[in-house]
Image (cartoon, rainbow, N blue to C red; front, side, top):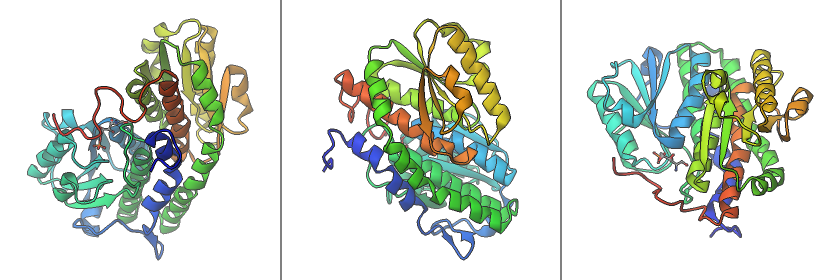
Length: 368
Ligand code: M6R
């Protein structure tokens, strides 16, 4: 059942193109983005004046990615909250607040309590969930299923990418209802999303380089991950994977924060993974990251740079260059995350750890 793979996680990494295609399927017809069967009406969507995304772990990172897209497409304030913090605070919500609860299992205790907290204040709750009929969708006003298929590996891979895609569908549906995007713009965004499974397939065909690099770095004491904009949550996710699978000290940083502390960690030979944005997308972001990489390289770090194919400007600063297919800025997390998953799994394997069942972790966290 592992399809010839040593671990479920490796199989699930390869299933990502299908997970994405299945999650998008059926959600665009007659020029409109469609959510699943909903108890949140088009009018309710139009009335939304604030969005909260509540989730834990990787699902929380998928929400951080979505924030950039939903703010940009919908001109709505979006807050992304760890469910375990949100539920104990006194967040300001009302019936025009949309709370998006993202959970692969649909059973995470903190996320479940967070939606109860939100519903008690009359907010509308939309679950993004991978498990049919789980408790979180049952207690939500509406549900959008990610069709990633069952995920066995404790480390989330295909469910995480599917969550990003589903969150983007929510963003497009909001933009469409609110009229902040013209129908042809919504259609174009959806088409770009539909092209992502092929882009991920291309990434998968090139991961041997990442595997080899992982084997070289298996004894590193720590690894840092840097990104900006949507690359920042990708850095957080890369670090989380490495912690949970390889039991290695790993931190993700917003590259702009380097000078505010983390740069003090840089020392000779420290591996630093950098997620570069496209040079064609947000040129200013690209330039800022180039200068960040040159700073850390000057201090002796080993720079592992994920950059768009053909981005020659980055070459002098990259000790190792991992090329990514060209996709639009907002969709880059869907391709950039994949080499980082492979990286962590391969380090864990080299260290002799169980990739599917990391120590101390459970697949679904039903205790608080
Ligand atoms: O089932 P959920 O999506 O609610 O789970 C949330 C987190 O426990 C989960 O994403 C966890 O962080 C993963 N092990 C990360 O790989």
